[in-house]
Length: 297
Image (cartoon, rainbow, N blue to C red; front, side, top):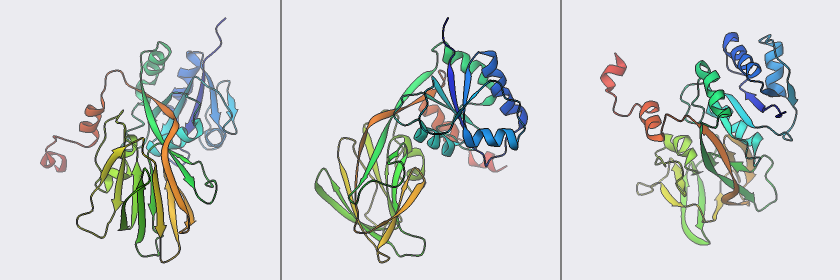
């Protein structure tokens, strides 16, 4: 007898969700014979706040788990957290969008039954996404040192702009005078980097982006580079400290620290609709080709 499929579930506990929508997911999993493995904080939210009637399930209390699929319920922020928890396990991630924009979480609860049937039948597309790895000259980073979207070096809120010396493959590039610097993957090119003028990269592009945040110089522009180059950052700040944000998870570092960034030895596997493309998603999410006059009316 074939062993039941296992589904790891991670969710946003700060975002309002309707009882009916979440209950539908568990009803579908039960009907398909898929065993839910529910992340502990999300399980507590479902039981204490939403009073959801749960089928047979297991609890995920740490990062030691195994599943055939991982479901992220929320927006792209929840998806990034799910990718962190999945790590290098090569478990494909399906993002159910209960947020707003959603480049990563692009499935809907309305068609979750058919989506999971397509997954079981092997009909969903998979997209393998490169990841950034961060190393610190002073030892290990406090948090998870991998980013699916971006690594951002930023000034503290109460400090003046910082100086960021950049070396690529051991060769000096330049020293940015700016509020910060973003190193992004193709996946992250539609995130923070996009909001400060970085270029959009198509999935599968073998590139990283370097995008300055509020640079002090009219000739400073974003840069795209091959993803096989090592990137070294050295920061100077009047406050003698700066922030490192890895997919939004930030920690403070002293400006004596050198950061080394490179392509991680694993990829994140993302499930995609069989009937969509990245270009179609761009047009839809960013309203390309739409008449702004009609949007405002």
